[in-house]
Amino acid sequence: MYFLYRFQFFKPNLQLSARINCKLFGALILMTLTACEPYKVKSPPVSAQGPKKFILSPFKTETVSSSTAPVGIQSFFFRRPTEHQVVKLKPPKSILDQVRIGLLLPLSGPNAALGQTMMEASFLAIFDGANDKFVVLPRDTRGTPQGAKAAAQDAINSGARLLIGPVFGKSAKEVAPLAAEASINLISFTNDRTVAAEGTFVFGFLPEDRLHRIVGYAASKGIKRFAALVPHGKFGEKLLADYERTIKAFGATFVSYERYLRNTKSITSAIKRLGDFQTRRKALILKRNILKKKNDPLSKRILKKLAEKTVLGSLSFDAVLIPETGKDLKAIVSLLSYYEIDRKQVKFIGIHDWSSRSLIKEPSLAGAWYVGLSPQPYSNFVRRFASVFKKSPHQLSALAYDAMALSSIKAREGPQGFSLDKLTAENGFYGSAGLFRLRPTGAVQHMFSVMEVTPKGVEVVSPSPISFSVSKTSPKNIK
Image (cartoon, rainbow, N blue to C red; front, side, top):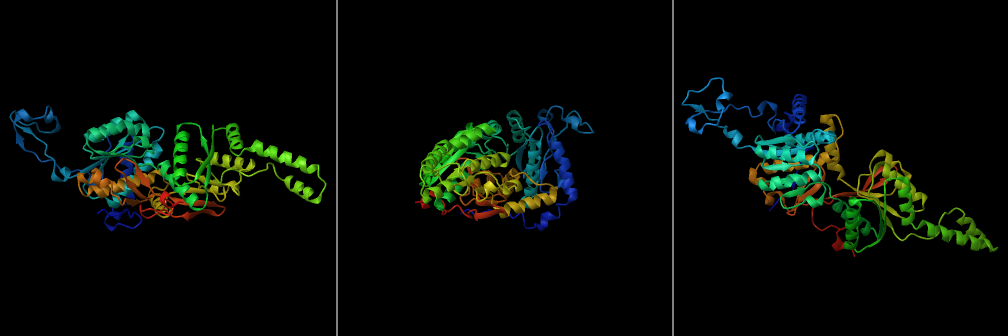
């Protein structure tokens, strides 16, 4: 029977907390500077022992036949052996017992800042739960598929029994065959599900999981007619297919969708088509013309009310998916309201984080729902990270923490802890991003909360499930 592991990073670990001080993290930062060099320059391994215990035990020596000596080995010693003697290196038992993990991140190039904050989050996990035998090998992918391939091979050659990373889908596709050839598992941070395979896990937040959560919650609240505004491109096409499939699974109806390019003219045209603006506008004009020909008091009152409207007629959908955030989201919701797809008539739903101050202040977004990480564990992680590194982490840093924490726990069982059976515990694991579990197919299922945007901030309207049992918003419970 598997147990649900909890990464209690917000509770002090008395044994390890003494090691987490300014000097230690100063040393770690120096170490990461080495890690930021191109992949050919290897970073020193990271272990839970701290800098003073970094594999400094002296090697034992013994006399062996010169026929078995490696070429040039004498150059490593101050005193050259005699002609019939050479020195063979024999690692101490502590090194032989080590469990090594390859950490593949973009530590140089345009995504270096992301890679750095993810590595720092990994450090927190190491010092929270790793034992003295747990060693991490940071390797720079340079943010490219070629760099990731070289970094992975170097980590494998250095004895890695599990690979964590890389971040991007194309890089993960390059690394996966190397991991398979070495008979080790790979936990990548991409959310490209096409990468997933047995032994190759897609640890990123999958849009499918987010869609399932938000559509399920909306359906449970009586919303049965769904629409979508999606950007042109492969992402939009894949999202539409998953969205339609999810809607049907919950017994609801996918009414319509429109695509747009990322410019105001294209977005405006897409919104007008989605809301059937021209038809509704003509209906209003026709109604006004008819009423103008009448002189009775009722017709005059109706005509006066219609003077305040720009269209006439109801919409064919109750909710619209907007897979955007930031400035693009603000522009879209403002235009939706302007062209009479109002939040009072239609629920705006999203799969990205809408908790920023600028979005909360947007009047057109009030009442909107979106899926997000479990607030309590994630906010605890953010506070902890900020207190140590004096900056806010990228959201993907939570994934880095959880992947490393999971690895450190499984490493206590030795290399066999990284087997497919051990990693795919049915009950899952609970980390800084909430509940998750790795599936034998390579998919990683994350559980999300549903949040509502209000003028006072973001409110949790449906907390993240605490188990993977059938929930109220699963298709089986939606009639």
